[in-house]
Amino acid sequence: MKALTEPEIRSAFVNCTKGEAKRLAIPRDLADRPWGALDFLGWRDPQAPGRAYLATEFEGRTRAVALRSPAPASWQARRGMCSMCLTPHTGGVSLMVAPKAGKAGQQGNSVGTYICGDLECSLYVRGRKDPAGGARMHESLTLEEKIRRVEGNVAAFLAKVVA
Image (cartoon, rainbow, N blue to C red; front, side, top):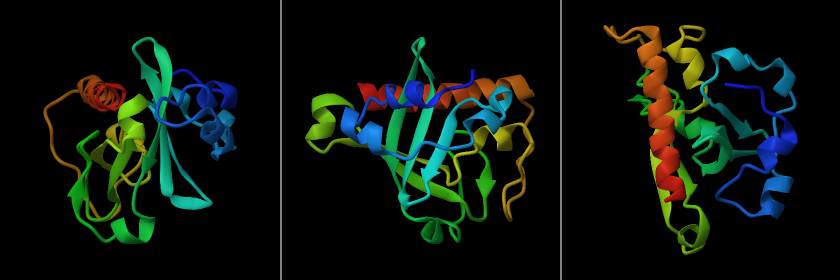
């Protein structure tokens, strides 16, 4: 993934207003992120742990979505598997819900999926981060195939948000 800038991220949100996008917390360490190892940029709002965000390339453009999830204390003890990267966790998977884009979202419609609570799926897939308390599944897929799977799962989720 190419490095993203704060203005690029703020203008990429598809499921919140421009005012909300202007006020939300963007990570301060964008320059220090391992962009070459990221399939998407995901982060939690440090001031509002129930809010999370995801930004990536989708349909040739940078797109970002606002997510809601339980605060970390409620998902750290749960056992589950991320539906983006298929990493099993003894703790650390959270149901993340995104309001749909446009009129459907304004009417309260949303899309949800289980994602690594820290939104670092890219690092788990590449073996750069180990899931807490979880063992890795043995898979016969190559790293490139696993990366394509994450990209496909993220794209499928975004397609549901913007549909």
